[in-house]
Image (cartoon, rainbow, N blue to C red):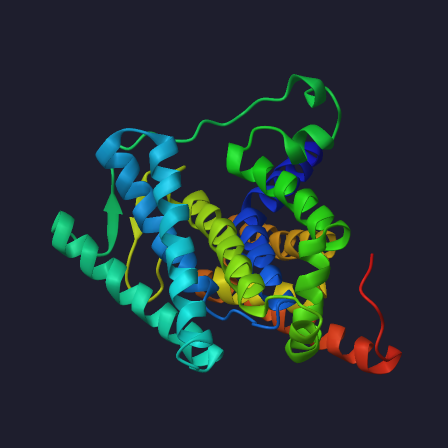
Length: 307
């Protein structure tokens, strides 16, 4: 019994952390270039709607997920254009993106489908759960890693790839240079605009997959003020701050938030605790972890990024 509960706990950590992990890696990319993206929630929400809607309309998972990623990348390009060319404040643009996405997806659901609230796409293909024979008989590891969707595993692969890009490629070094001082980077011949556009395109890719991971596996979309993302974009911003420009550290923090969500699920299933209060657990955890991180950082002083 205890063994099954531990396996269920580990499984929930991996599954619930995927959208936060992917959105956080996107936020890390833009943060490296000196443009902290507060519009992660909106980018995820747009991707969640258009991915499942396109899946339902075309019957293709590839086209559906591609549509979600494409829309999120387009939103990212619009955001960086408004900020760079029109000189708008990046935080105002991000908040406007979140508000616009909430209203637009709710309107599109009502206009295209004539429905409000939760939209069910019965004809949309679903992502299958994958079985990995190599770890099937390994205790705990099987419970943690086996039986998830493709996007869940893709999140780990992309995290490793992003780590290599950030620390071992010219783009990564140029991004960090732009984030530290755009003026100095420009003086050294680095195209600041190019780096920032590419970083927002990359952020769109990650947020697009994050949004698709919420709606495509269940064939549904939840509109309204809470929305499909349910604050995960805001949690992702906390993960970006604590991750300190290191994709692998971002992965660890995202798993920590996944563990908090798993604990909330266990408490809900085994006690009579208020479900509404339990829904706030991840946000309370984010606040506490961020506070502890800030206190430790102030005590230790500035340090270079690294594991």
